[in-house]
Image 1 (cartoon, rainbow, N blue to C red):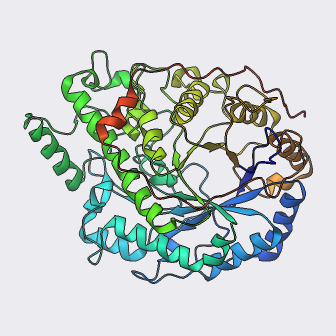
Image 2 (cartoon, rainbow, N blue to C red; image 1 turned 90 degrees about the vertical axis):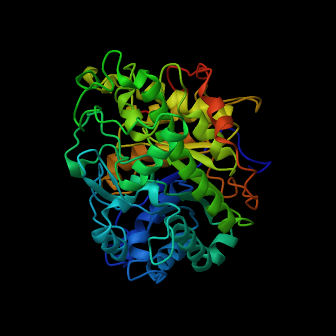
Length: 490
């Protein structure tokens, strides 16, 4: 950050509507949009975050990229003087909580999936999830001779070329690389499109032929050719105790269960690591930062099984930190960890879900800070009330305003979900204006606060064993105040 930065100032971004560029790849109604962006700029918002949908840009055919609509959008944002967080959205829009628009992944990819459905994540019953390609095909040339990783890399190169001048001028502060469904580095373990309902534990998603073969090879190498992917972990809406895998003395505690869970979570870390490495090669030297989003799976967090986290690929238990290895992997790419559910309080959750959003946020943010990386985040659900704003402010500065800069823990940015007509109603906007001011610790808007240096080359690959060293010991999170000292008043 710049040397003259106002103390305790944390930049606030606002996430744009999912369909700001519509399903036909058209930037609709720029005039209304311009008025809304100007209002955000007037109250001191630092920038916007936007999904850059793969399904729209490369929709017409392999390497046929169409950037015109996004180019118009970005030029408008720059003209107004806002910064941009761009999400490389390699997932489908539709089927997740709050999705109001439907933008599938490119049609030509879905057509390959018709003859080879194993390119998609698959559950034990054989249901395919078409939100995002299985990480099992990351390095297989199944897409007209290209691998999934090459497709992602080519897309990012095309983005860099299309937005070159805007990047070089420092307006695109973050490139958040989509690494799974909803842009999050996880497996699609709780798809609403397949009937999942909160707080179901979800299901493992490693039953496509590529991941199954990978697991069989790993088990054989470990001297256990008889081991296979689980067949006793229940279905989407089970509770942990209803399954053999997560039940009392369940499979997850056995040697075989631990081996499987380590493999399943390691594959996810390797997937993130490889694609971020490609992103680093594409954007190296640009004045921008890389970021990756980790999902806030807070249900069953207070159950000893942490079942919903485990099915999503976060091997986190009371005696094993499932998040610090992710943070350590991100540190090699100088990447920011973007975490969700910052607005939630335990008291708002139902007892039966054994939900612990506050403890989960504290664990993940502390892990990021311990690994020396920037930590950013967002709210998971749309909220317009002071309770949610104050919880976010508490998580942004867990120990309140810091009078001197030594050893403070503070988030690097927060993205508010999301711009909507509802946000601009008089009462909601008034409160939101106060929230922006408190995010900036009552300082005036500082246009040069986000000081970017050219992106450096990724450091050497960290061996998986070294990443897994971060799973133990489970360290207590850093201390958190019980309330923010910069509250928004209704």
